[in-house]
Image (cartoon, rainbow, N blue to C red; front, side, top):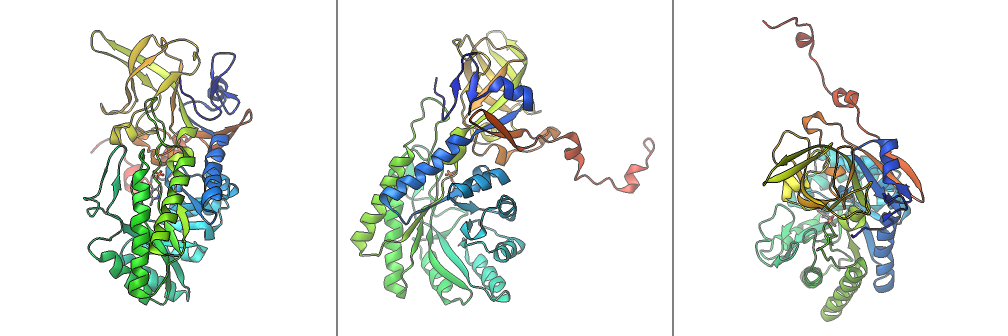
Length: 443
Ligand SMILES: *Cc1c(COP(=O)(O)O)cnc(C)c1O
């Protein structure tokens, strides 16, 4: 059995996280419930920062908010000295509400709306990662109107694409993100950015993929990007000083997963950038990375209550829980796999093989296709592990299911960070036009 962070089996044979018994958490907060191990999130932040402190002191670590963001998460990331990668006006607004300093935010996105650009400029967001020439024009105009100079990085597709277990050097050109390096688009955008008065080009950005288990593509992209920085210097005379290599480090979802450690990533990336800079005779840039999943993924556990158990003899046993694709769309969206335990009976060995189904009206609403569980019964608590990233942030109200609550647990205390949605919340945005509300019966 593989548990993460402060998770352990306590004397009562229950799953305990952050010193809180999962059975007590369910009694207090109900299910489904997102439980976040605050100590593990902090420890992951510190491993990134300490890893770079040892190998590349000028490096900055920007937490990728899209993995999981609430006001409390923004406050925690600020406390841990992280920068923040945001991709929408809504994420900027959330982070500001959490007290996150705007100057430590980097604003990403392939289609930033004029209102989002305005919000970012007016609140003092520190860096824009410009994705395309259209955005460059919008930003120049918006900054000119405010008599500002926006600091930008240009997003480049380095021709390296990394996926979970393999990576491909071609095909990357066909991406909705960024400026293609190989065909000269990126260099043309650099020249254009350098010609503008209200943007200041300070560096380059790339992001090669997500849930990456192989470190080599990170080193390769560092090399490609440093060589491009050097080409920019030779062709324009401008020495750009910032290099952002994006996020993407993978995490454990099931026990067979074997992702590299944060320490090995920070060491390898630092060495690769140093080596490439030395070979090119390029001054060491300020390095940025943008981890999301590897900060919060393993720190999240979702607790569900087991409901109907449907056995189809000789075929399969469906175990239904009180959530599903509304709180975790990843299995339906991209076949993501998870491991789970009966949280109130952790000591016993698995006795039955079941499929864990959600409660939405979709046959595709399955959370786990096959898993061994300890004699599960209606009323048991099912814990699905590694749900910290891309679960709450991707949650929906499909079938008008209220979205779950989320708690931070640490040292035996549990603090609500997102309250559970109510039916009133579900209709709060609905508008019933008068001509429909007065009807009696059907015409
Ligand atoms: C999604 C994303 C990240 C974070 O990726 P993880 O795999 O969660 O680490 C970082 N940077 C950019 C530009 C992204 O799109």
